[in-house]
Length: 118
Image (cartoon, rainbow, N blue to C red; front, side):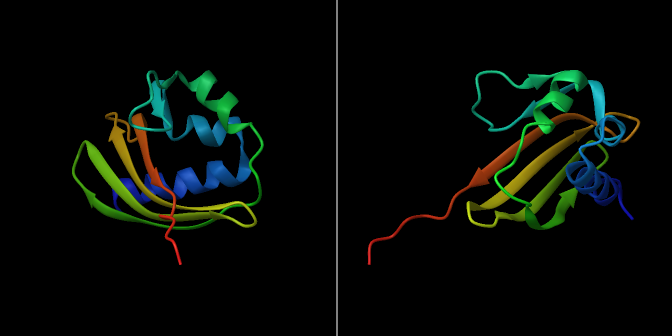
C-alpha cells in the first residue's frame, strides 16, 4: 500500500467515524484544510479541522475514490462522492504530506455536474 492510499484509507475511516483520534491520525496539528482552492483562507489547525468534520452532512456519502498519482510529498486523489438525495460531486484532492505521512495541507477541487438544456 502506498503513502497516499494509506492516507486515503485513514481519511475514509475518519469520515465514517468522525472520531477526533481518526482525524488527528491523518492531519498534522498545524494542517491547512482548503475546502476550495480559491477560498480566501483555509481552515487552520487540527482543532478547527475536527470542528468542521463534526458538522452534519446532508446524507450518508457514497464514494469512489482512488490515488491518481503521488510522490514523496504530494498525493493526488480523484473520484466521486454522492450524497443521496442531495448532490453528486466529481473530486480531485491534493494531499501535501508531512514527514510522518499525515497531511500538512489538503485541498479539495470539486465540481458539480454541468447543467445542460434539453
